[in-house]
Length: 313
Image (tube, rainbow, N blue to C red; front, top):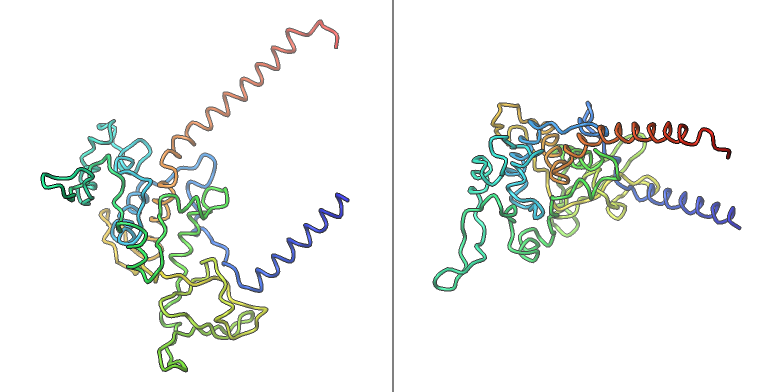
């Protein structure tokens, strides 16, 4: 009976995979050409890249996406992108103070007349949310709720370091060139955007819904908008966020050229750090701990052999 149950499970998994393939599914996210420096068990984040990624987040992403699990002081703590050994208490780090003070947040303490007021944020405050609540966020984005980015790389990963960052990187660089999207007049007289696929596998047209944007790395099912072979539906889905990165959109403080690929790489590094701000310390401690455990295991084995050498078993 166990054998038949396993066999049924295999067939069911195969059927699911085939149906997912027929419905398109998301294209497999890929890492940059040189991979991620932090992907190995002892790998570390590129601090310069994390710093630039924070700048991309501030200037591009923060207008719609919050990071409610992160405090400004995390930026200046050990392992953070702006850690300074001169300020062991991150609340005293002048750079962190400056970043926090650039944002105004609602003061939870009412003023003299009983009204709440805004004040410059402090390092101890959480990152400022771009919206007062989810309802306000949906109202500003045609009903779509921009996801919080605090742990986006954890949520989109598959248990391996780099999977979530690869998703962010692929999504941001995966939008089609506007020249590949043709605007036509629909049957109702309204303009519609049409994407034409003409290759060896995908052949047909994909109608992009109003207010939605196609991305092959976005999980979804575009079969309802596909006019080609239903057995070969393009990968990906639609999302409410248009392409946000254009060459030169951010003027990097360190002079790095802000290409789309570079900005996507840097913000993915920053979000990887944000998902686990202590990961550098964890990995730094991991190797010595493993060496200690191996040494301890060897010591215990030799002790066992020494103590019980004359005792029959």
